[in-house]
Image 1 (cartoon, helix red, strand yellow):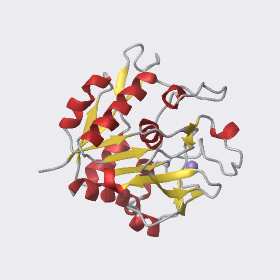
Image 2: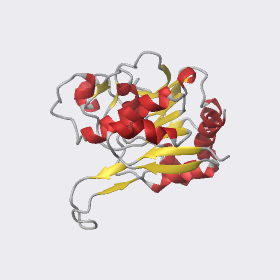
Image 3: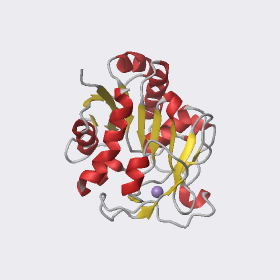
Length: 240
Ligand SMILES: [Mn+2]
């Protein structure tokens, strides 16, 4: 049986010229491409009430949490600093519930960018709300916009053997589009990679099947086969 990955949607919650006030749930197609090309079947989970998370997770074999807004600091007991970006507590609380349901059902979780931060917060970790003003030894540009999405710009320093060993052999440069970052890792999560200025770029917990990165592997897919390996390695975890 083909394994199914639930992909939690983002929510377009501002009026715009394309949709007006027909607010829509959406997910960028390159996440779908990475999952599909690895032999998994993606199913988009529309943002909903946290109470639905258990039922949604029962329908799938794994969970992908994607990029997007900043995470509301109330979920790690802080007041918002002046430099925080847009937050969406409805998405935060639904995705936190999905993480808890996935763990309870022993299903693998892949976190990308915001997803990486969200898992950490769901498990009791904290974030830099605004990397630029709060991370004192910042020396790298972590939001490369408007440089194109698929262009890798900063290096990784791998910290230990981990699920991305085969990816790391081929790729030491990644793209970077983040405004927040993990500050303290939640209990049980282990650091896999940092940037050269020490920002947390990847962590995992094999025992609980948690895999998370700060960069955007789905956007790197435009560079060809070596980058599909990222999703293939996650597919191997789901197959186990
Ligand atoms: Mn970065």
